[in-house]
Image (cartoon, rainbow over all chains, first blue to last red; front, side, top):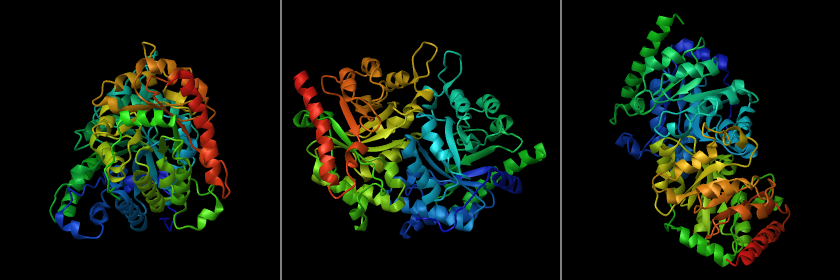
Amino acid sequence: MQQAIFKKMTKKELIHQIKAKKSFLCIGLDVDLEKIPAHLLQTEDPIFEFNKAIIDATHDLTVAYKPNTAFYEAYGLKGWKSLSKTIAYLNENYPSIFTIADAKRGDIGNTSTRYAKAFFEDMNFDSVTVAPYMGSDSVEPFLAFKDKFTIMLALTSNKGGLDFQVLKDEAGTTLYEKVLETSTGWQNSEQLMYVVGATRPEYFQKIRKIVPDHFLLVPGVGAQGGDLQGVCQYGLNSDIGLLVNSSRGIIYASSNEDFAAKARESALVLQQEMQLIFNKKSL
Amino acid sequence: MQQAIFKKMTKKELIHQIKAKKSFLCIGLDVDLEKIPAHLLQTEDPIFEFNKAIIDATHDLTVAYKPNTAFYEAYGLKGWKSLSKTIAYLNENYPSIFTIADAKRGDIGNTSTRYAKAFFEDMNFDSVTVAPYMGSDSVEPFLAFKDKFTIMLALTSNKGGLDFQVLKDEAGTTLYEKVLETSTGWQNSEQLMYVVGATRPEYFQKIRKIVPDHFLLVPGVGAQGGDLQGVCQYGLNSDIGLLVNSSRGIIYASSNEDFAAKARESALVLQQEMQLIFNKKSL
């Protein structure tokens, strides 16, 4: 489903949107048919209808939407169609909003290019998340796409994030620090952003020393227990430099017919917290 | 596209197939519309028609097929449909062949379960490849599926594989060794297999010390320059324990109407090399 309009989103435009909306909120569209309001299940494409309602109710409070591809792939062809319709709807109706395909892909060179085409060209997302394990030539093919961003896992907030990411090398550098350091030398590295979990705000200080200027995508605020104040204390830079994601806390705020209105209320709570931070910092 | 028959594939059955066919070949179905014979482009689903012809021509020489999902996703909905049809065709016509969704997925717990459902339930693959960076709770959800295998990246053959995978910790253990060691303690770890690139045969000795009994999926023979003899010298175990993949060298052996016959010839060369190894080892 090739998009009619090829959408571009620069870092400058993203920062402009953040400042205009006084929000660096990202809403995760992780749609589970068992959790959405029953009345939607009678529609032809319940996942898309759910997303559309959430987007229409929250678009002025958020600067980004992030569907996680796993939730769509789990429904097979139907799910993939819902994802295509969702991104097409966003690009057509809210082109100033930053879109993230949370796909955590990564493969050898040519194959990564295929993934990049799937998300950047076929679906026209602004960005995609990738895994770093296979190194430079698994990530650079994504970075080769102009006006597109590649968001690489650095330090994740799940329990297993501690299995390998904080292992130290002979010089005492942890793997996630090494991942950050190394990647800044890759071609087009200015188009990198990084995933850093909110459950470990104390790490943001170290991370900002290595990547002071890059955007960090921060999941884990809300359902995973992360703390917005802590994240901002160490994570903000002069461009804001953060996209703080909340998924379940917003989209499943209610499972009744008022779900979109309740999602708006939950998004507003986070946006207002962010606005206070803007005011305090006179940004 | 839910499969009618729920397919099971045990390790015992896989070993039986390997010994019966005197082959541990895996054929990578990485289909590129620019490389397939022109006459197929007029059919309704050229990718599926190509796969069907390759499969019909090679099924007795190989024990596994491995479509890499990137090649299908790059064509959007159409590509996803071709992938669904390919796996359905395999399960219906060649149920004794092991199938691998080369997807390199991985996410936090619940989300990984979604990916597992997509590949193990919706499409009914026997196995899926995953990335280790997010640790235990990103991989264990895959391992929770009975009679299904999870093939984790350990040491890859691309240039960037050296960026992080061979970093040493304070005790001198490389990351890929740590990944292998740690994962053997995970729940249902007997359902793990590992990706180990063929371009570094000397590493197989170390790897077999850590995971003597697990199957290793070995890409890189053929197009990536890996050497079958070297891999076998160090990688074989008493169950064979290897699946050696070749993609481009087989499926693009010819771009004319004889493509399937030529693919068979190329597969036969590898199978015969494998048969010699069987005979030498009296397996």
